[in-house]
Picture 1 (cartoon, rainbow, N blue to C red):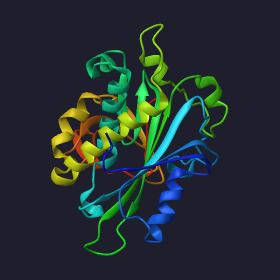
Picture 2 (picture 1 turned 90 degrees about the vertical axis):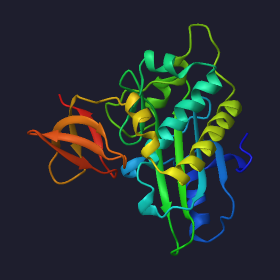
Picture 3 (picture 1 turned 120 degrees about the horizontal axis):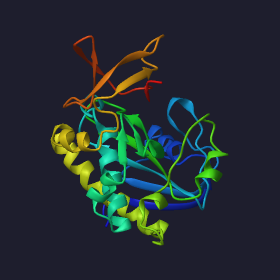
Picture 4 (picture 1 turned 135 degrees about the vertical axis):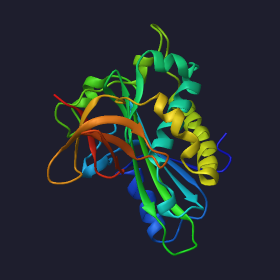
Length: 265
């Protein structure tokens, strides 16, 4: 497992994403790295949010991976990561992915894992390409709730957010997998899918992601695209990972960025 990742385990850091970003910017990254901290004091979410890592109740880590593709050719990467995370969770928990689908595990475009519409985990991707013809180093941060969501909710700066955890995926009485084993299972899945994605792009994953789509054919509201929210009906994703939104009989493509997706109230 994880033959190509250098594994780093630290007791505490501000942010594993920031740690690896700093190395990329200073030209220190040579091989793929996976870095996990028992405690992150300034963990990062999207749109500048802070995500607090509770050492015993969540698992938060980052990987730095050099893609041969240019940043413009990495469309759909966050969606691919979501699929890889589900596969890693299924393996670590010894559960069939079809069972996880049946009990309500879903992916919310572009970067969240939901269980019955409550957030189980999130993905943050940063990085880029320093010079033309050099690898595109992408720093992929992943945070997953393991248990005790009430305690986690008290430590994040998002209002009115419902959380779920991996413990809610398990049969009654079943024990959570060891955190180290879960981490290695996730890394093994990420490594395999990164290699395939680098060769083939997102297109082979479009249908698989649609199986887990949380909001397909539902009325949605998107904020962060412009000054005003955008309303429409989610119609799945394109081959480039864009969100397909139907408005007045026309389909428009929304591309990943600082976009939040909500069910219309």
